[in-house]
Image (tube, rainbow, N blue to C red):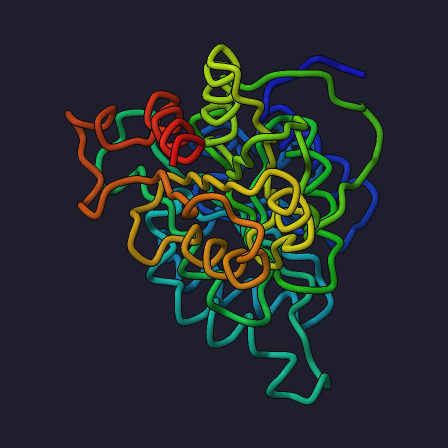
Length: 325
């Protein structure tokens, strides 16, 4: 086990994947000798050459279109979109090509070797063009998988699993945690299952669900709630598509209460899908309405970022309201 931060874990995952499989090709804006804007691809070009790790033009639609072609021809394409906010020019390529290629060809062709990495979310004072959380847009698209790690151990294991998965995967990396999250990570090759949530902490009174950078927030809220004598069960969803309905439902059957938190705006956020599914499945077990603690229905602000982001105190307020309903 080695102690590393999330960026180092992602870099090591890419290194392992490229070392074990010559079909793995890494590309995107500035990922070559520069190592990417966050340095996630540092030294990969130096080690594997310009044919397997290289820069692309500043054209997101072109990056994903090129990645679709590579994956369709049997490569393991790992494309980087420099910020998730700039994934929208590639939206058509992702939802109409990557996600549907296998279906429309009757399984004659597929782009299952495609992984799209991109940093997402706020917390770095990036303003409205470098802080968005677009995961819910893609969760509406059959044919994709959407994965979000919360710490270095998960980042490495989930990224290796994503690269090797037989489906196109969007891998959203919480940039706020790139250097803030560190921990013990196995130095060898390992994978974590996609589509399985993790119960981070068991509890009896209320279930808290989040993913990515919101995980430290709900964990802090759970600690604050325990001072009030409220026992919180904390779940990291890890995969947005598919998401682990059974894990969340089993927890709500036990606690009778649910609070979901994400950075994205409230309206149409993925918390709404979770709330609807759990309400339908656990209705007779609920002791209070399902609560959502999210970003605001506004463009992401620069100077008011702290007011916009859902924090531990906002989550704590929702916990208290749910328990005292």
